[in-house]
Image (cartoon, rainbow, N blue to C red):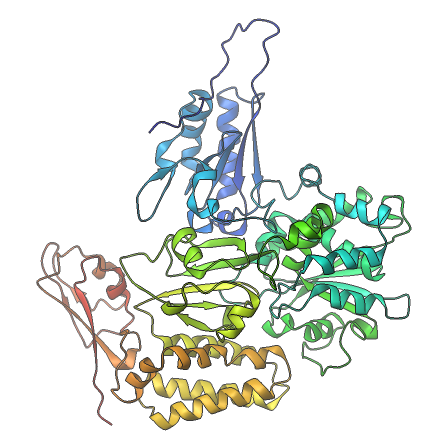
Length: 622
């Protein structure tokens, strides 16, 4: 297909003196965790070698960036300034990219992005719907800069906000600018950032602390990790601005030890910021002194709660504390402390640079700015998504996400991580913002967005997420410690066909008790998946307890699988994925499924492209 843009041409060898040399070509390899796990460092090395072999060293720069967000299509390579987007690249593709594209000016079309539904081939980064429908504020530098080069960050307005604040503004003016912007915390509850800042700023005493909460523990969430890996300086600058605003001289980044690449890049960024005078004493010639340490957590989900996080830094077991006093009054080591999420802090430099009015012009009346989600589950395009607050769920799922694959139907979406709620198709036009989600029984949370199709059992989903929060409970308070365990037991009873309608009433009553009686946000929000499942999908629970069947054919005790001979083509895909060799039969002939060997893992059901595997409900007799 035609690219409708000038090709890159190698200048002729004997070019006349005085000829303006062509712009330098930048070949940027994504080296976020996802792409690194798929050998992107080897791809970069292969591209560097190929560039040398073809004599492109003076015209081509091979470098790397952090995560682009489109993790499903990695490893990703982008060629600038054209903006050619290559996906699912392997080291063996490097020679073709160098020879065909960089030397011959003809991009490698087989590596272009292909739309999952329309099958349209899209060569340019800017034209891919996944990116086209986003508005990147927090993720503005992700995939564009080298996270290990402070000069790249500086070239994109890096540390200009800090310079502006410490040389031309007072701490009170910084807090006021954040207040006018309407910034709410992106860590879960959506509390107004400026309120915490102002309360802490007004506390007496010279010793105060600021903490970046990067303890991201939600299943399927990777927003904070990706920002730290792709743009660590934006977090350092945001934390420094927070420190300046409240009068703190010390900051901490609390990051889980399971994020080694993020920790590595933050450490590099800290060293570079100190060398350039953005951290340390008398920052940028002002009277502001500020240092940052990184603290590696052990991976407890409850440490995402700010008082548990404080206890962890202090060397205690991470357990929530009763409030008041709030951390802004009495926090780390008994001193006034402000804790904000990675995404909250990443928003602050752009607010100071662009102004509160600019930021407040994005989003809704009560939810300003953008929201960042990790879009996962039964979705064609998974990855990191940033959209203005108020964007409908349908836009994210069907336009950015590309819809539901494998000709399946949308069933539900869970927002807000394991503590969020399951929302049905009737709410697809629901705007994504703090208040709308809360009213629907869910929450913004830290930003997980899990899409489910009609093969998903809502009872099973509620059991999965509640089991996670129950296992992550610190055990300090009875409602959370005991209540969630009883709820999991009830759900297990229901999904195995042993529950009753009385169990549904008991489950709902217990969920409200846990929600109202728990000490911290973990327990208070843990019942959300169950309560929304009962609210929007009660008929599915009824099917489990009255009819003793699973409509989605997902609960092992309530389903049996069989092969439909007239539909089976004998492709043998099911034979290859069956872990117990329960499926047999020669190629091109209908296969057989031995029920005695079948463990109901659903592998055959999910991989069959011809609907030749049926999941039949087992009608259990009480």
